[in-house]
Image (tube, rainbow, N blue to C red; front, top):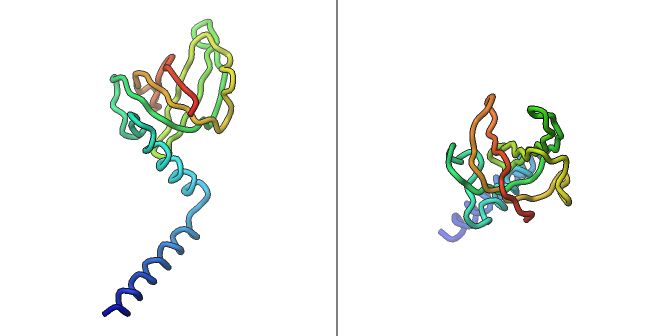
Length: 128
């Protein structure tokens, strides 16, 4: 009986190893981000964030863009948490000191959907 349990554990460990080897870097990074974001107290996952309610999300900066918006410049930052992406927009800003690709952020604001994208405007933030 003990030999069968040991054999079963060995098979399961081997299957886990095979899954890990077959994973792409993108899948591995997404899992690491999900694990990290789930440990940030008081946050929700981007994919499950309710619309038109104040929420807190945690993620990593994937893209930074400065765009003109209605006569002003706006800083747009795409944040990814392994479950989805959120575009954070800060109106009237060209940059945020210390914000670079790969920065870990905790954002708090009201999320809406515009042109199929989840967006938040002028959220409060902190570096994690």
